Length: 175
Image (cartoon, helix red, strand yellow):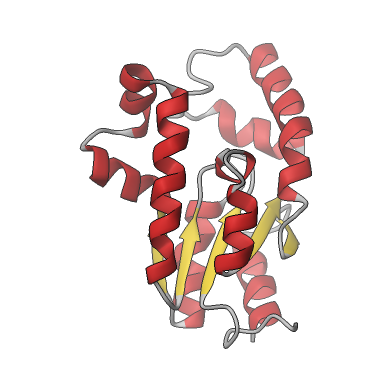
């Protein structure tokens, strides 16, 4: 089946944290005349807590289960671009669910730009307080595990480009 705007009622942006899902999402949604929803925001609203607080208070296993439950609610949306958490495709067969519910776009970004972006982050619970060496190791090892899930995406997009070019690439694929 050819992927077009008409056939893509739900678009799931996937990729490692820092790959640009939350930044590209609103721009892509605007270009396609779709709505945009960040799934982490839906989780925070449902829980009344920030993601970092959920991890701290309730743990990662609880968060991953809530993430799956929130993903299931997206079946009721149409013409929507969703930014997902970096780990969502890797747990609870969520990748299969996303591909059944709509199309998934993997924003593939190499280790060096991920490190540069994540080094400046202060709000991501899985990498808080890591040294540069720890962060580099985390990116390399986690990306190695997660890539096999990300590769199951409907489309793989090179995210090593400007936001403008990335938006153009995605919209041209979906026209």
